[in-house]
Image (tube, rainbow, N blue to C red; front, top):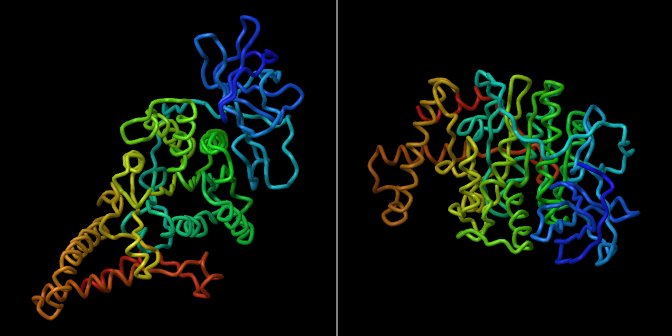
Length: 437
């Protein structure tokens, strides 16, 4: 890539900016252009027209981005700083600190956010379980080091609260480095999470990237890649085990869809961008583990209109190992966390990973919950007393299990005054056994 190539802005359509160059030399794809004299204003080259004009995405909104403005190529793509100086910092999508602390100077090594995912090194994790202290998760969807877990739910059912509780319970382990990528979520939630981490004295082992709801779709689409780039550095260069939290990966797809619409691209049949698979795959493939270290990814997934069959939700679900489904009906019943015990599933729930005892208990509980779901309609018509003794017993066990899997959270103590509770996996298994006897 060559720096210093100059051109001028020819056409502006929202965030889409076309730049014409006078000579034969052109910058490369993904290279950054800036307005002459204003390096803080950045344009990223997305493609080239048949006339060899650069089609760019404006990463910063400014009145200085106007027709005729002179631009100059930087010679590099978007990059993020690396090294120990990034610990405890909060960055935007461009790798610029936004926590009002000291700036990170140009002498700090940086990495391009478009590094390809390489999986040549084999990761042998021996299926190490990570305990969250949350009964319903450790029982139905146990976290396994180096794998991907999704928390699926509509608006207001507790996705962010649950992921914050998981951060509180497992990211405080100083042997692990926690990353948080906030994609398209509320600014208030991001601020609350940052303050919670500071209050719990966990900032030193945490790195955060925010591209929140107030940002343009270009910034929201890039924040996930920026966070994974720095996570890859710590995994490969410092042999770190990383806990990678994403809230919300659906917004990553949504931001890409907004950009696709602005660029006039034809959408897929489901209404999303035609490149939905590759956009998501490019992000998910970089959240992998190798011989140097591990990346365990916990991602929240928004369900538009509470529709689990939404094409984007289905695409995300197919690329993760475990799915925790949060239900609005469960939330309305006052149960927290509002996990749907029937729809929640995990490909990691095998005797080889969790042991025979855990596996058999889960199969028994799932059978009882399926039976409970079918009996509810019958009871609504004829009443519980008309059931057979066995059905009545199973129905009561199911009600006890639903109550057992509800749990007070540490991160909501200040809101409801109820102290948070931590349950070990052994305590959870023993509690389930007592109910099933």
